[in-house]
Length: 76
Image (cartoon, rainbow, N blue to C red; front, top):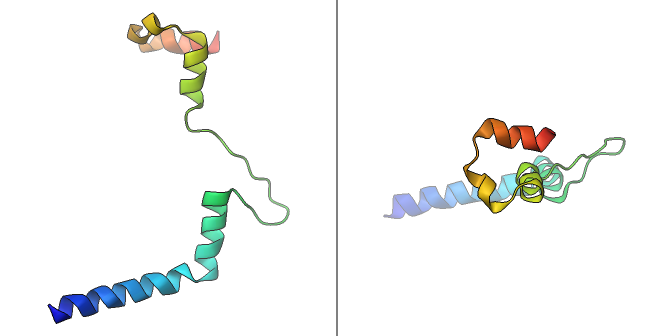
């Protein structure tokens, strides 16, 4: 039991050290806050862009359409 607690303590200590490192802070700033370095251009793409487009162009009965028709409606 004591060995498991000590191993867990070492693992958590290692995670804490990494979380305080400049590399981790930069990664979190990029991934969670959408920040970048000076001179970089940040582009944010929504994950549900295709879903939003489908909701605008298709009615509720179009859910059962074949995929090729859904793509056709998306682009034309």
